[in-house]
Length: 201
Ligand SMILES: [Zn+2]
Image (tube, rainbow, N blue to C red; front, side):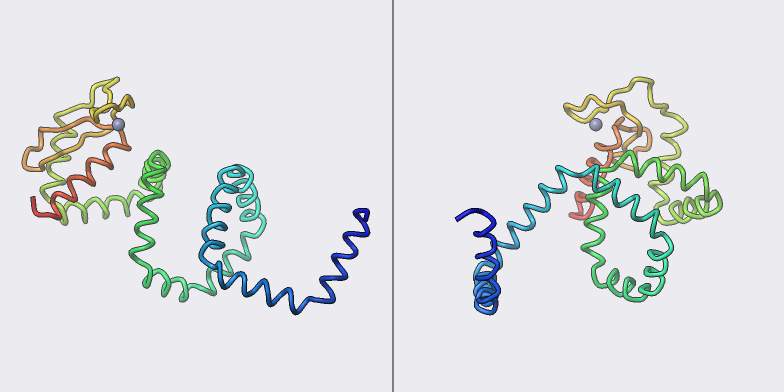
């Protein structure tokens, strides 16, 4: 049988047995739901990895083209989104943390730009921070004034060769005792200290 005939035959067979085939497929799906989902997830991940740049480009293009519709959609679904965000607070926060860990430079740039564009809000934020964490604020201020980061200072995290960009306090009661760290390891060390504090150590 040549290929065209084969195709036609398959088509015919499908048309004739449509209901039966669909039922079989449904049953198969039901039985192997978990594996199929797992497979799909893996497949999507691989696909995304391979075509990351194209997907990003496409999305950016799409967002540019449909700016108005997207805004309208967001505005009309505002309440639902709020509700969803409220319900999934923990999950969203975790996702955000992971994203920030992987995009530290972007976060820093965004933060810098935001502070420049919103000086009043930035100042209010600083005041709120100062009131909420007085000891932390004081230590950071003192360190900023008295301990300049040496030029070409390498991150002090074991094994890291990146340039240090900030000062890390292990103990805010000792404002002049700092470790120089790169942005990535500053986050890591902050997290470790936070966990210690949470455990009451
Ligand atoms: Zn580092």
